[in-house]
Image 1 (cartoon, rainbow, N blue to C red):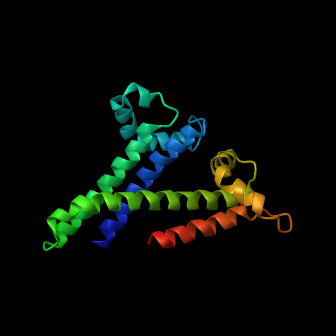
Image 2: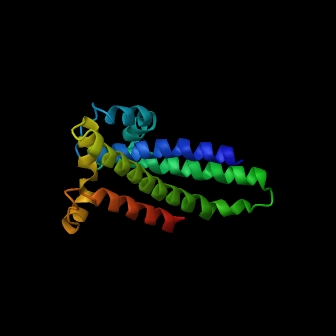
Amino acid sequence: MQILVFLLDNLFFVLVFASLLRAWMNQSRLRMTEQPGRFVMALSDWLVKPLRRALPNGLRQARLDWASLAAAALLALCHALLLHLLSLILLPSFDWLSWVWTVPAQALLFLLRTVLQGLLAMTLVYALMSWIQPFSPIGGVLARLLAPLLQPLRRRLPLVGGVDLSALVLILLLQVLLLALG
């Protein structure tokens, strides 16, 4: 059971985060023809494109990528539903009607956890890239995506020996939020 839950968690994490990252990259007006845009689109096109066609014109042409956000929400709901069905199969005494409350709550928690873990991974990669290969194309994309989170920290934190510690502080804050989320 634990192995199956682990595999489901990781599969859905990648798919949900790809959908959320696609929405964020579109919101930031980043080119999707370069990496990681091509990878994100390859992972999420199968769900985002049909959802985009199903949306009303107003939402299709909005600045916010509603189809990608809807894809992330649907995937999170599917993840929660699959976990609930697994628990029903393995624990027959489990309350059959609890899905009405637990599935949406689990989906919301999974979305929040995915956002925090994805931001944590992006910040770690950004910090490493800034030290190892500061002018790489992926570093520029990450810098642009993480700028709204890092700029307020940079304004408040002084440089320590010429080193920007804002990424480290963001990593610590994200870990605290993940611990609080459970």
